[in-house]
Image (cartoon, rainbow, N blue to C red; front, top):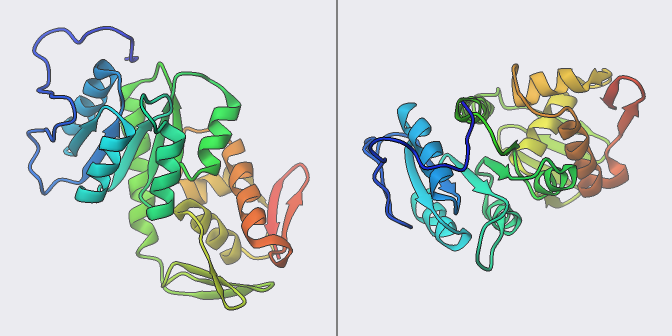
Length: 249
């Protein structure tokens, strides 16, 4: 099944623009969907609710950020092309500056530049329209599983170069400073550190960090490696192994 720009047939899921909705009990994990196309928003919400999620739908970035601040969702789905003062990239930037809530971005164009910009702003994944709602739900589940498992890692402190990784505190320090990393950047750095000295392929990194069966583009790894190098500089001995992938140390 693929999302198409057409009205849903039959009874519509209840929807009021900018309202808090859903028949799933509040104890379910909350997901905020920020999408101005009501058809797509309703369809995404319908499939997520079938999986037991509590869904809040926002038609623009401003309202979506209000929901995120108020309800502290487990994940945010945000469209790149939002109306108003804040587009999807602006929303992603603000979400990442405020915390590490997982973010899935929706884009109407299969544009590599859009994908890279979204990932650099801290998105965890992206989905290109038209898309299968089932695939979107599968990606959401995979991201949440990974986020949940990250909290159960045995606390470890690893030093590499002048970088100290504390998995218990989920904190990276360089000298006396704490370096702000996104959740996915931290997980990637930790995985590389726990496999110190090994040349790991992009596929191995995707399986280990994003989770087995992840649907996305392997170049996602390159974007996150570039961000780690940008934030940690030459003090991080992260090497490109041509024809293979990357090696730390």
